Structure formats: C-alpha cells, structure tokens
Length: 406
Image 1 (cartoon, rainbow, N blue to C red):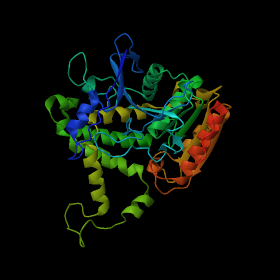
Image 2 (image 1 turned 90 degrees about the horizontal axis):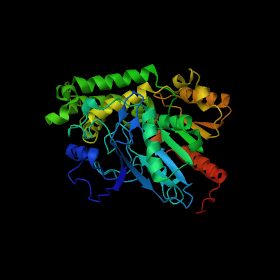
Image 3 (image 1 turned 135 degrees about the horizontal axis):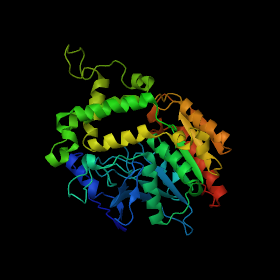
C-alpha cells in the first residue's frame, strides 16, 4: 500500500471545464490519493476481488491528538471528494460549503473532516475511466459492478490508512445517506453518530426506473461504443446530457421549478413555433446537461446509478430493516424534506421506525421546504441548525471539548 498527496494548486482551466481535464482526474487527481497494492485487494459484492485499488480523498481541518474528532462526509451520486474546496475541473465551490467549513455546523476548525470519491467514481478513486493496470487502457465495462457496501468498505480501508479507528459522525445526503446507513450497519462499532439526509434504506422502483432511462440514454448514444469510447477517443456527450437533464428534474420540486422559471420564455417575447429552447426551463436543463458532460464520465454514471439501484439494506438482514441496526449504540439524526419526491418523507420514516424497533437512539425532523430533493445541498436554515445541534451534542457525549463561542 502506498499513499501520496498530489495537491496540484494549478488553477482550473481558465477557458472553463474541460472533458480532457476531467479525464486526467481519473488517474491523477488534484487531491491526496491512497493506492492499495495487489496484496491488499477489495472483495466486492459481485464475488470478485479488485486489486490495485486507488482512493482519492480530501481532508479539512486537523485531527486531534487522539484522532477522535473525525467526521466522514459521503457524497451523492454525481458529487466528489471536493465537499468544501474548489472543484479542479469546474472551478466551482465545494458541493457542501453550506455546512462544511470554519465556524459552520461541520466545523473544520473543530473537526477533522474526510470526504472520499466513491468507488466507481471518476475523480481519482478507481472507476471505469481509471487505467486498468492489467491492460494499460481504461477499465470501461471491464470494471466490476460495485455496490454501496463496496463503496463503504473502500472508505473503511482509507480510514484504516489514516489511523481513524472510530468516527464521531458519518454524514451525507441522497446516495451519501445510503452510505451513512451502510456504515452504521456494517461498522456500528466505528460510528458514534450518523446523519442520513434525504435518503432511503432501499431504492424504490420509481427511482430505479428513472436511472434506467438515464442509462439507456447513455448507451443509445452511438459514441458510447459498448463502453469503449475512451479507447476510441470519443465520448457519448449527447446521451449523458439527456440522462442528466432527466435526473435533474427529479432533484427539484414542481414548486421550485415554478418559482424559478414558470412558463417564462428564454430571451424572446414570442415562441418560435419550432424546437429551440423557447422556455427558460428548457434552456436551464440544456445547460445542466452540457455542463455535466464536461466533468463526469458516462460509464461512471452507469456504475454509480446501478449501485444505488442495488441498495436494499433490509435484504441483507432477512428482509427486516430493524435487524440491520440491532444492538447499535450509534446516535442517529434522520432528516427529510416535505417537497422531496425522489426520497419522500415516508422513506425516512421507515428508517426511523426500524431504528426505534432496534432500540437505537434516533431523532427525526421533516423540514418544510419547497426546494425538492436538492434542498440538502442548498441554504436551508433549519438543516443548518439541526446539523449544528446534533454534532454539538454528539461531540459532548463523545468527550470532545465544547465549541468555542463566537
């Protein structure tokens, strides 16, 4: 096993996000990496071993002497390790800077915050766009299919490398929330508190259906070429853009779309009576698709969506979700949003009921918001207050010094 820090401080491409730059991130990311050799493979749920595993990660803050102030932040479907730092491809701020940073609820002046790119991703952790050491070519579809549990097991290897025996908290939303739940089930002795947000203990049939539409859009693009597009020097941009457009609709709510766009026309007073982007919402979705393809690998999209689809925590415990948390001493705070129809509140209530049945310590809040599923990424004062209060309470119970008063 080797580790290296590749903190290239070169600013992102001034011309804007670059697909070529994103491709370089797959093997040589702008973040620390740990490489595990062939003698330390990761056994996957698919029944095979993945050797030569690479994990890319970011840390914020410093570990205390006892290394007891660590918080693991888990990213969502198309996120990455840059939770509170500039994304080296897009140049945009970190995806969770609403909650992570100095003086914020996940206080980097107080806590040692770790965020890793997930297994199957495309920002430096081994995924389909990574170079397969056996061939010298990108893995493509030769990469084994991975699961949420595989992602978590890879993160556990990273924490072992960093010398973190127990986490003060694991926190994340959406697919990140799935990882939080899997951490609590797989490594209860290593998780003092858990903050799963806008998530579920299994993926619904509706969500699987949305993902399948996106995957089919990617695979129907002639440039997908059976997943071998990188070797052929092309990328299925059109298919991935359509997949992103469809998915992005599910991240918002009808009310948020109405508030943001309504039926307003885009830079015109009359419709064109054609198929240009007449409406602002059409232009917005096209922009979302076009910007996404510059930073994300299409095959990674297939792999991480499939990992979410396979997630069913109860299935691993005789079909009884409460059994996943039986005897757990982990403190839980479960959060949902009223307008989230991708992971509705009933999904969170199912988690809470299972935790109650298992005798776990759990609190639950449904936040009134019109922002839809993406509310966990946006400025929501109630989420900020809940996160701060939950972590302060957990830190006190864990024996950490009280937060400094402003």
